[in-house]
Image 1 (spheres, rainbow, N blue to C red):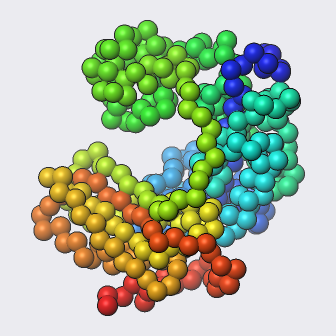
Image 2: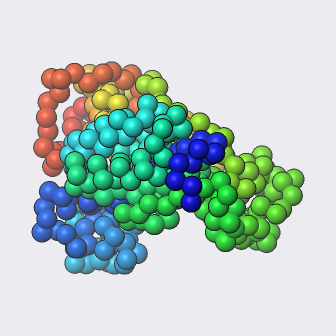
Image 3: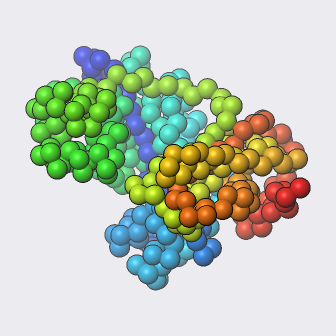
Length: 368
Ligand SMILES: [Mg+2]
């Protein structure tokens, strides 16, 4: 391995904290070390946000209904997320990233790409130094991937989790990719992977030797990009994000859903993700919007605007609940659901602090 990577086209890192929420809980309560720790919604319809590696061994993963997690891990410690604490740790970690590069692209509270191309130090040394700093300053462990583009850097950081460091150099890339399953290609979700596998492409190596036109015929315009990724090519820049005017999350279901009960876990996840994004930007929102697309592609949005600024996931979820109540399904099936916020403002310093077990402010969203 060339340590200085002088001949790499770019030097990109992907750094990702290991099981961040449970790890933060263990940090603050060392008695939890080595235990199955599961963080998420504890209500009747709660979903798992993140599970410690001990719980993952029993098949618990994020977005799993909490009831299922409890079946698999009856002896685990179950905790609600404490986002204010996670944000505090996240700020310390991002300060470390920013000390090494101005080009930092956050993916979530605990994960980012860094472009260190212009740096004199080798990217491997930078990754080692970042991992050491994170451990010293926060007590948390992070995994890092070092490569010459974003796709490979992220793949690398995932390769040896937890507490790993993996390097994929330009000369190693194709060999590294060849045996991996197609589902590990960026942008290939379960449905696309299934199509590719049915057509005889189950490894990334098989994709790389295919004709790009054959892939395009199979999965559409994304086929060329998948082919490029299979060859380890990815020109996407590491982008410093600009301050958003609105934040939203949405998903199209694999099959249309016929009840709000089935849709709800997605809204719980979105409320959490949108709340996390608001926190990252130190923004609060005045308006919450629910978007629903039905099986016949008819699409509606319903919004609530509050006199008070909100940013907590619980408040977003309370709004979602009111909005869901305004959209009777009447036999229609749900193809897509989304949750978003707009009318964003910088959060003042006078924000009332709330404890982590506060009751959502249902009154904010009462029908007027
Ligand atoms: Mg992580």
